[in-house]
Image 1 (spheres, rainbow, N blue to C red):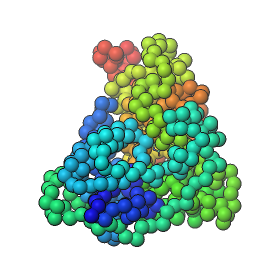
Image 2: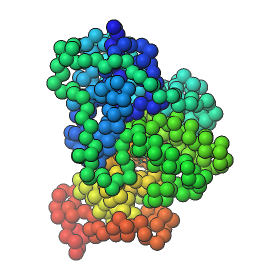
Image 3: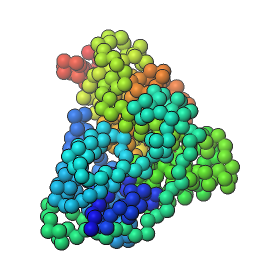
Length: 466
Ligand SMILES: Cc1cc2nc3c(=O)[nH]c(=O)nc-3n(C[C@H](O)[C@H](O)[C@H](O)COP(=O)(O)OP(=O)(O)OC[C@H]3O[C@@H](n4cnc5c(N)ncnc54)[C@H](O)[C@@H]3O)c2cc1C
């Protein structure tokens, strides 16, 4: 009797799920596990909380849905309160598990956890699938360690490669392992209790409901309109449900796969015609793909202040206005950071975007670029604080896409131009000419004075400015 363990992470779905197929072929009994890692709850080194309540609710909804789907396939979803390394070690030590099934994760922590487990449990087979990406790494004409250093080079190398169709759903899974029968007690591992009805009050009006059912609904809704044919023309708007696909939130949770989206896109193109806009949806999915492999390739460097640049020189005394395209600032101003998070800076467009993020858990791509540029180049704050706040707030938080995009704007990542500083006045004229977006989110309400204390913590008097 072989026992396997399916280790869910940011892949909360049963559809297009190769690891479930693999499990049905390899083992007689199965445990389905998700680790609700404590770092989600702990304050981080960047003065953020790890995961906002909205993100947590979205995750719970995804787990609710997964648990229901697994139960229809004769399985139970177990959730551990321990971090993945401890959870898996505990279970692999205590139970005769011979196979572990999981999807490849680009993140440094996830990769190192896997390495530690594989080193310690040498008689366990770890099956790593690539259910989160469009491609499998063996398809690339380069090794992941030699990932092209810009997106354009990557795109040119991969965009004509074949992309597999989504897999059909598994109809039945191996039998569940009865924990009592095995006489094992794991105090902090228990079956997931479906709770969406009781704890989702705060999200009743949110258009983002976690889980596979909502993900499929959004996929169908989007591709039954003609929005995909106009995507490129409207994708830069600061708000508006219909102006971009909104797939990112479900992609980040893994309640839909990139291949499912691509299949729906191809079907739309076959039925209604392909154009530059439909191509651009694919183009953006390639950006996501790039950042997945970028995280896998660069590991820890994704979180370093100087990122991929070799320079550790943070002593630049050049004024901030001259610093874009050089070394980004390494400073931390608690008051400025707090005000940026709250949407209380001298830049109404930034304030509006941040308030939108805080209230909805989402911000447009253009908005993200503007607020990131503001944090780095106007407020002079180390980009990693901004990335960490996004990690806390964004429903679509994804390690590669988030930290990779921040590096790009800070000029320490994959941007051949060495950073992006946006002119916030010009951007406001272009993307909010009537001030409607700013007004909706009350971006024009802010303290007239940015700093109330100077670098030595002395109060600055509003009237005199010193
Ligand atoms: C500073 C910053 C941080 C970001 N953090 C994240 C993040 O944590 N998670 C995340 O999914 N995206 C992130 N993005 C990328 C992008 O802003 C979002 O993917 C996009 O706004 C999501 O909305 P959508 O699904 O409607 O996108 P659409 O415009 O409809 O794009 C379709 C899909 O393409 C992908 N995509 C689009 N733009 C990008 C991009 N620049 N990088 C990577 N993938 C992209 C997403 O999967 C998206 O769902 C970030 C961008 C910036 C500038």
